[in-house]
Image 1 (cartoon, rainbow, N blue to C red):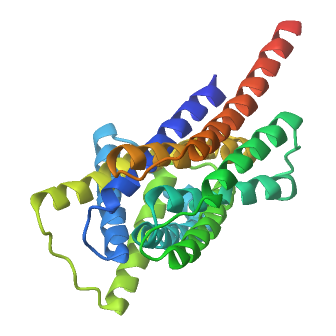
Image 2 (cartoon, one colour; image 1 turned 30 degrees about the horizontal axis):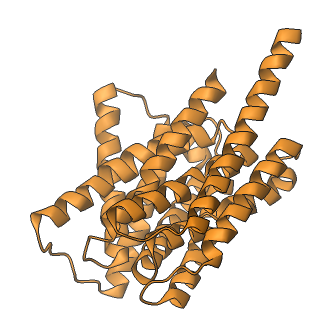
Length: 296
């Protein structure tokens, strides 16, 4: 039951993350500033949640995990910067799909890093998902500067894969605690970066732009990151890799629906392959587990 609950929370976080490109695309501010404000607003939201719930923060456990938390906070901020830059130079769907090359890296490294066995259902699921992603990306990602967008997208994927791996090494911390600390560290890192870059575009062109930034901070950061980090520690690395493809597929459909980024029949086929691979992997595993429990 706990694993199914963690899977559900992870899926919800993926759907929320899948819509972030729609909001970022409409905010006329440097990517580094958006990431900074996102981290600050998300941190304040989680602090409010902790105060409201009167939740105890275990400082000793945070200190025990501090080296990993500091590194993951830096990686979190850097990955977001490259992802948001990719949004600007290419399409939302293309940037998101590039970003989600990260689960492939995690999938391949999980037997080495986490001693997880490679089941045939997971292999089939990830291969089908990869084929679907290749179909979509093979058609070209477009945008104002596709090549620069490609570079930013690949770099964001490398940072995201590193973040996923680092979070598997965080021990005895709740999702709320680990999320808050990582966001606070990301806020500090991005503050230093923005000041060094002398980014001075802090004004809003409209009230809608302010609303979008606050939404990105609360929903796409505070809420989504809490769901993500609280579930990622309880799921196998390969399960995370497969379920993560829900994000790029949802981004593909959101961008087509709201931004007019057209979907060809092949792209739709690729998206269904991604979803099909994900569903097969998880359904087969759960069915096998249920049968084993009946036998016992």
